[in-house]
Every structure is written in C-alpha cells, then in structure tokens.
Image (cartoon, rainbow, N blue to C red; front, side):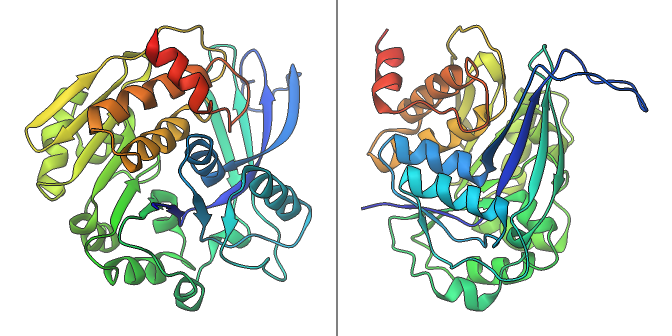
Length: 305
C-alpha cells in the first residue's frame, strides 16, 4: 500500500485572527488566538483523512511544542520515523490571518531544522510511496545536503513530490539543479510558480516549468478559487474550483496537496485527483486554522454536487 513519506518540517503555529496588520511599531488586538500543529503536518493530515497512510521523516523536539506536535500526529495516525530529539524543542510559526483571509507568517526553526544521513537511513521507502519534499528544507544548512543525497539515491520508481513554498524563488542554486531532474510531481500555488519561473502569469509559468522539470513530471499549480492546472509537458489542463465563502486561507494548499496525492494513490487520474483536491481546498478555507482539510466523506459530498 502506498504511503506519504514527508521529509519537511512539522512545527507549531500560533494562529491569530485580526482585522488587519498594524503599521511598524503599532499594536492591535487579535480576535482569537490558539496553538495548532502545522507545517508539514497539514499535508500529512489531509492525506490520512483521505485514506493515504503518512510517515513523518523529520525531527521533532523534546519541549512543550514537540509534545503538541507529537500529540497531533498521534491523533491523526501519522507514524513518526524518529524519536524525539534531545536539546531542542520543535519550532514555532506565528500565523496572522487578516479579515481579507490574507496570511502573514513569522517562523522560528527548532529541532526539525536538522536531519542527518543516519536519520534517513532508518527509513526504507517502497516503490509505490510518495516522498514529499518541502522547499523550506533546502534552505536549512543542517538538513539540505543529507536530504538531497538521500533523494538522489532513491530507486527511480519512487515518486518524489516537490512543494517549493514561498521562499524558493529560483532554479539556479546548486541544490535545486541537483533536485530538479528527480522531481516527479511539482505542487505549488500560482505566485510560487511565478516567482520560480519569472513568468508574469500562470499560463506562461506552466511551459516555463517544463524547461526545468523532466518531460514526464506532473505539474500541479493552484489558482486559488479558480481551481488548479494539472498535467505533463504540453498536455496541461485547467480543473475548475468550487465556490465557497472563505474565512481563512491558511492550510488550503496543504489540503490540496495531501488530497491530490491520496487520489493518485487510489488510482485516480491526475485530473480526477485534482478535482477532489480542489474540493478539499475549498472546504478548508471555510474553517479557521492550518490543518482544516476535510475527510473522504466531505470531499465525496462536494465533488458529487
């Protein structure tokens, strides 16, 4: 049975809702605040809720935030490949959501920012697994090179999924040049694809991505409420989204990615999997918090409408 093997970072979010961000030096009152497990947890929770087993390959700390992260992963049935790390806690992200649903993140990396070849050697990927790589990992000095070396040594039959995130803005670093030919599935939102390719719109970014990825690599580019674009090489098509009233966009892309991979693992075509992923993302934005992906039953109900 396929699994999602997540090599990214599980952190804890301090989620705060406010009308609008203050000016520098200003002060505002938040309407709500809570600690929620986030980061890579969101993708794994979405996958698990839609039938795809998930294994977290990253480190997790031994403090209060590590405890929160482990409790959340255990509650979702996510397997942890590593024991808690000594000497560091799990990292924290302050996630600020304005009334417009726009998000602002301020992150501090903890134990999850490091990973060794010995850590990765514990895991034995199977040929039908999906290995998920976050662009954030490529920016972490204590993690990036061991992770790249491990990925390049994987059997070619194992699918590598790459989510660039907002901080990976160019294809020309040594790490990206090494990773690009090994990517089997690219998943990002529109602004991330534009930043990476230098294109001015998604229609231009899709062929530009093809210049950097292998011809057979599957590309998924999310376009907010408009749905997403999915396909290989020149055969990329638009999959419409679902109309909902959004209250918080935090975690919507993660829900999309997790449910999309669960659909592929269940034998769906990329377009059919993308339609389910669009439904999951639409439902996720109607709820507050980062890990708000619906389960299979809710996705079925929306897709069937």
